[in-house]
Image (cartoon, rainbow, N blue to C red; front, side, top):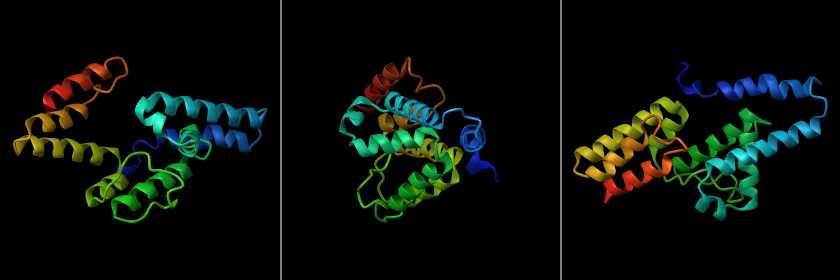
Length: 172
């Protein structure tokens, strides 16, 4: 039963410590606290987002993603984006009518909808299994790339570019 919640520990701790402290008056200046949280959320999203994606993002998407990463309403903003991706994965509409874009491109896929709701463990297992299936069906480069990119530590910031170059070479 804990599988879907394995990465919600930060979210739940944030609600308890940061947002709860703000609501109970432990934070001396709420305006500065919320501003700092939004600023750190912005920096986090900027650091994690590739430059070509960042340049294409609208200001509304940048703010919404920063708000989501800030943890001001941690559980609610995560539920919002999960609902948006699940709706798109099930073939439904963008729940904001295009006002905000999803975090990543999502096409119709029952498997993506199920693994998105099930959590990170089933999702990465599905991604590695799909890579292995591609490899077994003769798409060696693409299958190896998908398996390798999902292994632990391959997306570390200090060698991410080298790993991407290597997997691009495999897929050609």
